[in-house]
Each structure stands twice: as C-alpha cells, then as structure tokens.
Length: 287
Image (cartoon, rainbow, N blue to C red):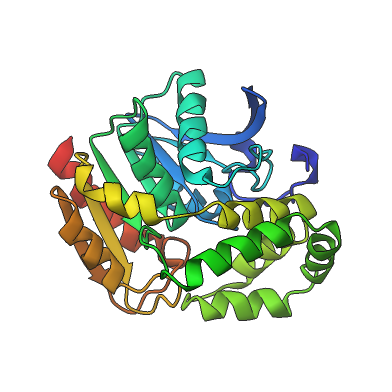
C-alpha cells in the first residue's frame, strides 16, 4: 500500500511521510511543537487511532505517530517467534533516524507493550509512559500458545488473508467487532477500520504481530521497569479488562493506575479528551 492509496480524508494525511530505515519502510506523521511525544497504536490499528489525541496534544508537544511494522503503510519485520523485543528495537531505531528522543511515550494496547520493551531493552529514556488499556500480561498458560500458533498459521495463508481482506470491504463485521471491544463507535471509525482490513498486507501484519506476541517474558520483566508509568484501564473494555491495569501497577514500583468509567478499549478514539486529561496530569508531574 502506498500513500496514494490512503483515503483523502485520512486523519493527518497532510503530515504523512515514508521513511526507510534498516530495510523497513515506515509511515510516520509528525505534528505540533514542543517536547516530542511518541504515540504507538495497538494491534490492527494505525496512526489514525492516535490522531485525535495527537491533535489535542499538538499545542504543547511535537507528536510523532507511526504505523507499527506490518500495519497501515509500514512494511513488516522479518517473521520471528518473539516479535515484541524486535519491534521495540525497530521503533527505537526509527526514533534515532528521526533524531527524536521522546519525552513521553503513549501506547495503546500492544503499543504499550512496545513502549515498555523500548525502556527495558534500548536507549529510550522517556520521563514517563502512558499505557491505555495496555496488553501487558499473558492471556493464560493454556489459551495463549494456541492463540499464537493459530495467528502465525493464518498470517502465512494467502488464501485466508485474501478472504479476510475481501470480507473487510463490508462494514457489518467491522461494526460488530468494534462494538465487541466495548467502544463507543462512530461512522468515521467504522470507515477507517474497514479500509485497513480491506488491505491484505495489513491483515497479514496484524496476524503476524499477534503470532509473535508472547507476553510471558514481559510480565517477568515488569518489576525491573524504572520508567514511571501511568496505566489507564476502562470498565467497558472487553479486550483488556481494567483489572489488569491494577495488577500491573502492583508489579511496577513506579506505576500508578486508574479505571475510567463508561469507557471501552478504544477510549482514545471515542473520547480523546479523557485520555488527554490523564496525560496532562502525568506530564505535569514529570516535566
């Protein structure tokens, strides 16, 4: 997929640029002015997921949004079993090529895991992290290996990913999937996710990411995280229950956590002003 393939009304399309770094073509959007904030979306999403939050932040910060490898316009990393550490290293390498040292990192769902892994494994040293419904703990000793193997198998099947992409041209399944996350959904949200999952490369990238998302080691390493982190959970999140944010808080010495009520997994899209308020309280503590 190329920039010309993006819908004309794609969020922050005017700020899009493609950057080559170590064999990966990255899609990056940069807006605003001030200290840099890196915004990382979750599995199956793209920069669009963080656009409204970035616009709210852009009066105070330079916002750097990226499509994670295999998502949107960014090409995939080579397939590997343990993808999370590799993705964290790749994002850090991108930041270095941009000559950007994020003052803060905001991550949603799997993006929060990438942010933490960056702090654990690379030279990234933000003042603090904000996790939005972070997918940081294993889903269970029995179910997780099955999920990983299934996702890896599906990602390698052109017939299956092609079928899913053709299915993505309709909106009924997207509407149902978004509603199942506990999110308040809008027609623009449906249109954007419908566009993404109509792209076979995006489906392959999302499945490949899911297939390499072994969280057992991350859970073991969480107590060694020294970067302050604020964890947002949402009471209507059916993907990552809010209880998990508070469980993670107990594992990390420098963590705080909050549950947002009447909010779902995509709270940063449905109600970006609520996440903006949480971030500003966090930034006031560490600026």
